[in-house]
Image 1 (cartoon, rainbow, N blue to C red):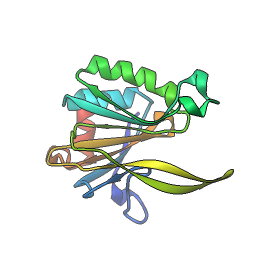
Image 2 (cartoon, one colour; image 1 turned 180 degrees about the vertical axis):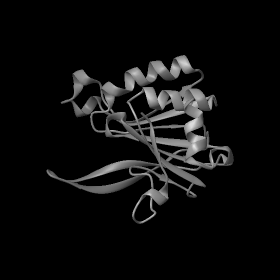
Image 3 (tube, one colour; image 1 turned 45 degrees about the vertical axis):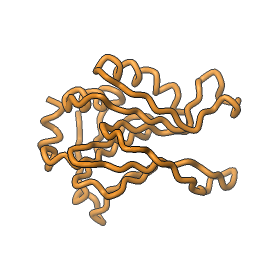
Image 4 (cartoon, one colour; image 1 turned 60 degrees about the vertical axis):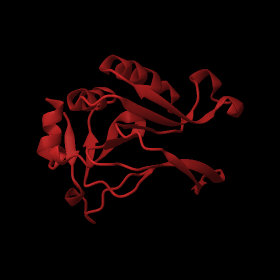
Length: 169
């Protein structure tokens, strides 16, 4: 079952991206909860806008979890079909040890800012992406092992959560 929430579903009417910034703030924001890969894939398949870019942070292979020298701070892939997207989503799950990933149809430059975050083991500096969305451009921020994603869009066809649900059909 897919659940779509809008900012008004939150006590403070504030829905925002958790691990990235988007300037200016998108016209429409939604929190989507479903099943990993299936929900995310079905959204982009139904939305059917290619090419896409997938931006991953803190990429590391499962065999190299303890080797920081093999960790990449970020990776950007260009996706041209549903098959490529499905293949990448199958791959990404194993690489999300500590990172997040983002899918967008925007090809504007992605900038990165260094932020300091507090963890149990102390403070750490982390790269956070900053996106710029133009007209009809969309961004999904995927987290919680891919079970949820935040959708930000300037596409006026996605002006309500019912319209977002229609994309899945």
